[in-house]
Length: 318
Image (tube, rainbow, N blue to C red):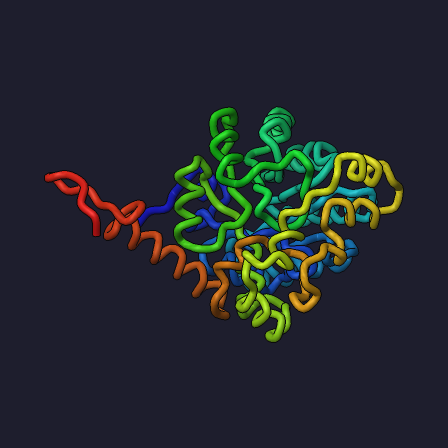
């Protein structure tokens, strides 16, 4: 089946699947594995910390794959990220994703360098601003997702179609996506690709320890110890106070990017969404992507959406 969308054509990938930024876990090896499997791998700049390490990571990725990969920058008060952006531009990394505040400063430089700029947004208002500023595509994050949260977020199921009504640039859906049904659901809602992070935490190429991957397999998204911190958003006053601080850690904690997220420590990562409910075994990145695509094609060609299929005589249940 052909999975071409504006996103696959823009990014030069086979399937409309993008790896999430995954702070602390967005390694070269994982990004390469995702790209080699037909998706878009993502290297996290904040995890690497220095321009030198980022340049090394870019060179290593290029030695391991000739497929496209991207780099995520989450603009904060940390001026080192600006220096790291210089490296990404010098190395002509074709795709750069930004998230967080003050992204226009990054976006203008990315576009001036002739690179593809994807921005992660949390409301339709902010997505429209990114489109106006020149972003080539937006990642729309629902509250079910991991990482950055704001008090104004809605669910993925509501956010994506609302954005699709307003935006002209393509949308990448994020938040609680981790299997064939959520993949197809996001595309039906109006997205032209999806971002997954949590399910990639449990693949073999992810640097997370095996015992922590087992924790994710056993995790129950209905359990308050998982559900509550994932859905928690900071109060508006707290967020405003933190984003005006000169202490980067204040900003990170306020938006849920620091280690103190409330998610059980045995998980070994704060990059967890409600998609943990779809983690039931440790696969390679290719096996995971192939499984999602194969099951999605089976749903479309055999059982049909919702378990129904069309026949000349009418609708028949399977």
